[in-house]
Picture 1 (spheres, rainbow, N blue to C red):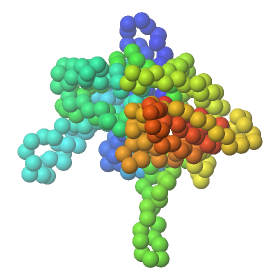
Picture 2 (picture 1 turned 120 degrees about the vertical axis):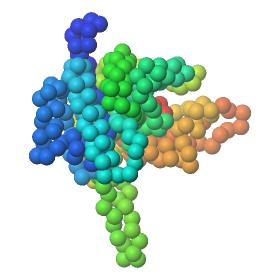
Picture 3 (picture 1 turned 135 degrees about the horizontal axis):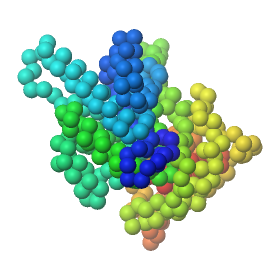
Picture 4 (picture 1 turned 180 degrees about the horizontal axis):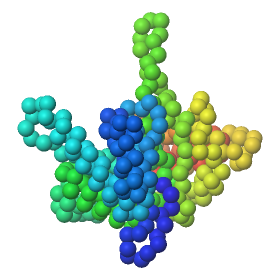
Amino acid sequence: MEPIKVQSEGGLNVTLTIRLLMHGKEVGSIIGKKGETVKKMREDSGARINISEGNCPERIVTITGPTDAIFKAFAMIAYKFEEDIINSMSNSPATSKPPVTLRLVVPASQCGSLIGKGGSKIKEMRESTGAQVQVAGDMLPNSTERAVTISGAPEAIIQCVKQICVVMLESPPKGATIPYRPKPASTPVIFSGGQVRADPLGASTANLSLLLQHQPLPAYTIQGQYAIPHPDLSKLHQLAMQQTPFTPLGQTTPAFPGLDASNQASTHELTIPNDLIGCIIGRQGTKINEIRQMSGAQIKIANAMEGSSERQITITGTPANISLAQYLINAR
């Protein structure tokens, strides 16, 4: 996401980027024959509409422009999806019309503001627009973004998107956002024994790119009642500024050129309160494995010491791996 340019106080003349997650079929409908539909949407709305490349079952559609252009583009997408639903119903026995559904991809750091204290904001959005709004509990794989699903009649969706845009402008993302990149349809590898194995590490870990907003990063993350210091975030910010946007495939961790030519492995220790360790390890170790895979660092969690309320975490790897692992642990 690019920095938001605020030109007029109080008015909505600001540039914003909204990302949508779509299935291949939905993308096909938006592109239209020979690209006619998307071309018309771009011309009529004045928004930039980009569609991610790749033979992925899911694609990212990015809409950028002044807010009024974004609302027009969303309206056109919502009405197009409704038209598709009506067309598909003409040859099916179903009588009740299913709602239009759009999935937004939002930096996790902004989801709290969308939900509001005790769910107050999301409840207000549902009540005032008539749309259903749901924020996913987990981040999308290998990213710090969450899916926000909106469904309802096109009019309700458009009103809801307006309110979401206002929230996103009022509380910009904090810190680094690792954008979600859909995985390519993995080609199964067939072994001599006849077992089929899908590609375990798809390209998404290789394409891990850190997107940073040009905003000062917070010194602390508040988790429950704990403020966890971020000593390394400013370092991470510098790393990301030098980082090449794409890592060549085959390398599983991002390369940070110019940082430490020798790239020797070093070790860093963190202490984490016992009651937070669960959310870092995740169910059956899923979260900690994800952090290991994304950062490329080795992470060991010491056993609980009697009488101690904290656990020791040891991270080993290059300085870049360690910074990324620390950031991902703090983000949890």
